[in-house]
Amino acid sequence: MAMASPNNKALERYKSAVTAAASVMGAAMLLRRVVADFLPAGTSLGALLLLPPASARRHAVLIEEFDGALYNRVFLAAKAYVSTLLAAAPSSVPLMKASLPRGSGADQRVLLALRPGTAVVDVFGGAKLTWRLSRQQGRRGEDGGTREAFKLSFDAQHKDMVLGAYLPAVMARVEAMSQGQRQPRLYSNEWGKWRAVRLRNASTLATVAMDAELRQAVVEDLDRFLTRKEYYRQTGRAWKRGYLIHGPPGTGKSSLVAAISNHLHFDVYDLDVGGVRNNTELRKLLIRMKNRSILLVEDVDCALATAPRREGDGGSDGSSLAPAASKNHKVTLSGLLNMVDGLWSSSGHERILVFTTNHKDRLDPALLRPGRMDMHIHMGYCGFVAFRELAANYHGVDDHHPLFPEIEALLREVEVAPAEVAERLLMTDAADAAVEMVAKLLRDRKAGTGEEDGAGGYVKQKLHVGGPRRPRRLAPAPAPRRGGVGAASARRPVLGEEMGGSSRRGQGRGSGTGRHGRGRGRR
Ligand SMILES: Nc1ncnc2c1ncn2[C@@H]1O[C@H](COP(=O)(O)OP(=O)(O)OP(=O)(O)O)[C@@H](O)[C@H]1O
Image (cartoon, rainbow, N blue to C red; front, side, top):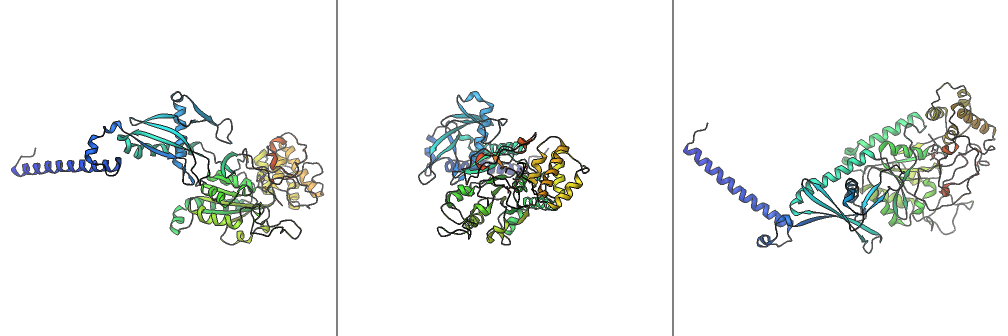
C-alpha cells in the first residue's frame, strides 16, 4: 500500500484539479462542436439553453437519386436496404410496390419498394430511424424526368451513430448482398437511359472454343488488369483496358465478351450507338456506367461514323462502306474515343472497353493505331481442337470417336464457324447423331451444297433478351428451318427485329456463316 506523504497529497490535489479543468474544457469544446454542428450559424449559447432537449429534436439525411448527372450510389444502396426492411416487416407499411428486377426471370426474388410519401422504421443500436421516400419533378435544364429521394430521419442525439455506424453498416450490408447473389448484368441503352436486360449468354472462358494459347493470354491479361490498381495509380494512367475482338460472324466474339464478364463479374453495357441521339446523351450514358464494367460496341465498323461527310456521299459502288456522320449517325468514332479517353476514364475505374468487328480491314485506322486498343483478339473459323472442345462440352464425346479423323481432315479444307458446329451439335441429344450432323455439314460444305438442306448458317443470338431495341435496318426473316430434336434450344429465341437473313450462296465459300441477322447494318 502506498504511504500518504505531504508530497503525495500535493500530487493528488494537482491531479484532481487538472482532471476537473480537463472535463470543463472538454465539455466546453463539445458544447462548441454541438453549437457549430447542430445549430444555424450565429446561434448563441443562450439560445441553446432555450431549445428543447436533444432527444426531442429530429435530424435528417437527404439521399437523392442523382448526384448531379450521376446515379447516387448511396441512394441505390438505400433502395436495396429498404427493400430488405420491407421484406422483413411487410405489415409495417400498408401499401408497397413489388417488382421483379427488369429482365430477370420469374425465379428471382421480388423487390419491395416504398411508394412515394410512405415510410418504414428501422431500429439500430436502440435508435429508431425512419426511411421516407419522396418524389419530385426534375429541375429545369435537367432531363425532366421525376426523381426520387430518401429522407432518413432520427433523433438528433443519434447523429454521430447514424453517420459513423448505421449508414456504413447499410452500405456494407448491401455490398455483401450484391457480392453473394449477383450475376453480372447486361445493360442496354434505350432513350438515353441504361436498362438492365437479361444476360442470356452463360459462356465462360472455358466454354468458348478458341486457341488455347490465346485463351491463356486473355485470362492472364484480365487477371493482371484486376490486380494492377497500384500500377495505374502510380503511373497516373486511367485504370482501363481496351480489347478489339475481330473475326467472321459466328466465331464467338459476343460469347467471349460474355465470358469475360462472367470471369470478372463485370456488368456489360452494350452501347447501341444508333440509338444515341447526340453527344450529350452519349456523355450521360458513359458517366452513368458503374465501375467494374465493360463498355461494348458491337460491329464497330458499321456502328460508328468516321468523319463528317457531305450529303449524298457514298462508297464508289454507291454503298456506304465507311459510315459517315449524318442524320443517322449522330455519334462519331472520334467523338466516342474522345469521351472514353476523357470523362469516361476520369469518372470511374476498372473499366473495360470492347469493340467487336467482322471486318478488321474496314476499321478506321484511328482504332488500329498502336496503343489505342491494348489487345487485338482474333476469333477464327473452327479448327479441330475447337471442334473437340465443343463436342466434349455439349456431349461429353471423348477424343476417339470414329468420325473424328474424317472431321479433322475436313476442317483443314473447309471454313465453318464454331456457331454452325455448335448448332449442329445441339440439334439432338444423341452424341453420335450430333457428330454425324457436323460431319455432314462439313461434307456438304466441301461439295458446295451446304445450304441446300436449309439448315446451313446460323441465327445470331444476342447476349440478351428483353428490352426492345429500336428496329434498325430489317432484313427478311430467315426461312423456317427443319430442325431435329433440340433445334429450338440450339436457336434460343432471338428478338424478331434482330433476326435477318442473307443467303450464304453467292458469297463464296468461307465468307462466314451465311444466315445471321443482327440488324446492325452489317455489311
Ligand atoms: N468459339 C465458340 N465457342 C463456343 N461457342 C461458340 C463459339 N462461337 C460461336 N459459338 C456459338 O454460336 C453462338 C453465336 O456466337 P457469337 O454470337 O458469340 O458469335 P459472334 O462472333 O459474336 O457472331 P456475330 O459476328 O454474328 O456477332 C453462340 O451463342 C455460341 O453458342
